[in-house]
Length: 336
Picture 1 (cartoon, helix red, strand yellow):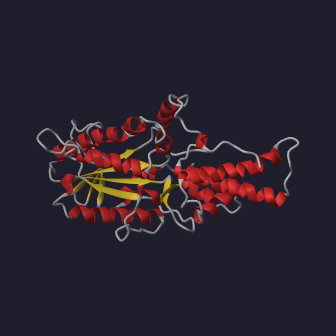
Picture 2 (picture 1 turned 60 degrees about the vertical axis):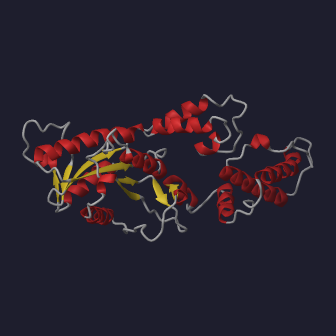
Picture 3 (picture 1 turned 90 degrees about the vertical axis):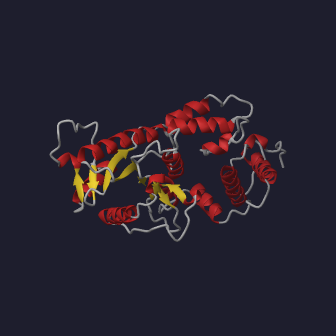
């Protein structure tokens, strides 16, 4: 049985010579399970609370989308489409997306609330009020919680303030989150798992935080037997991430023909300079050429020509998917 990311990360910390597992310490009776954090780092200069994101909120998206599918504005599209590309066709799409964002990121907020209390209690009971509070979030297989969503919600929560301007989560200095269901995009299909750190306002004036995190991240890479590659020299954009399942499908040895056509188009997207209207018109023309071949009694085309049309149609669908085009807006079909 494969060991979970949560168990592996705990095993990693236990092996570090500069880490202490709080569960192994002799603690006073008031230090119960609900109060304690997980680990102490670097002579107690930092406290780590570990949270694994395990509750999959994807059903919330499907439920919300189902409520809007009968609307006239709801688009007709090919395959699975990113939520934002669906909602852009709805006049209240921004409002729906905002509501869904908070629904699916609720587990992140819950992790913040619990971690802040646990780190605070650890500081009080162990008498280390100046320790750095580090929340580690682990995402092993919840694909809807992408690096972009986690980054945005974590940044929001770290910036949350009280009425007097002080930090709401004052005991969380920084957040380190690790994902094993996403990778950075690579030409050769190598897996580069994101390991992202976001500092909170309380990180200012704490230069030791950088050293602690660099040490932890490099050791974590070594523990997993993978290279430690930093993003300091290149700003990583949201579009640089890809779901691991998609990366593996793109680089499998024997790829179905339609997947090969999709991959070839993404490498050379020759339709991307056209307007949305021109792309839809292009698709309508291809469909008009192909349709008679598939109709009973229709004019049959040579196999090679049908294959060329099917490849072009796949390219059109891929461009439509990239843009999130509503296929209901294609020009009316005129058979060739």
